[in-house]
Length: 78
Image (cartoon, rainbow, N blue to C red; front, side, top):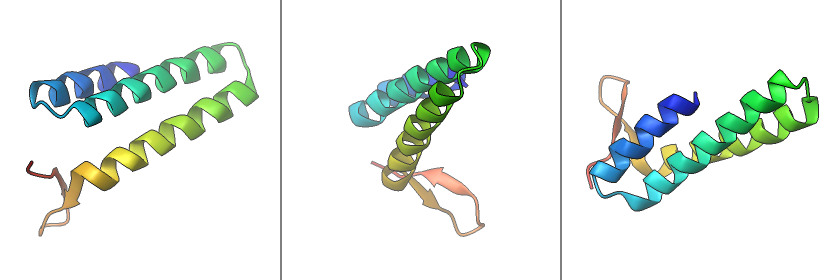
């Protein structure tokens, strides 16, 4: 997942959407922390990183994503 968020950060940076790029960076960091905690079998670390990751995703999706007429989601035009 960290790689996907790295790609997302580049996507938003290219479109000069600094806030979304910052959130993507935070999600990338949380995904990395989640992977490390899982590898260490650290349940508390997994829970904390999952909460951070989920909150970051929800925040960005609420602001930058909208439902299209066909039921799919698209990035809002800026």
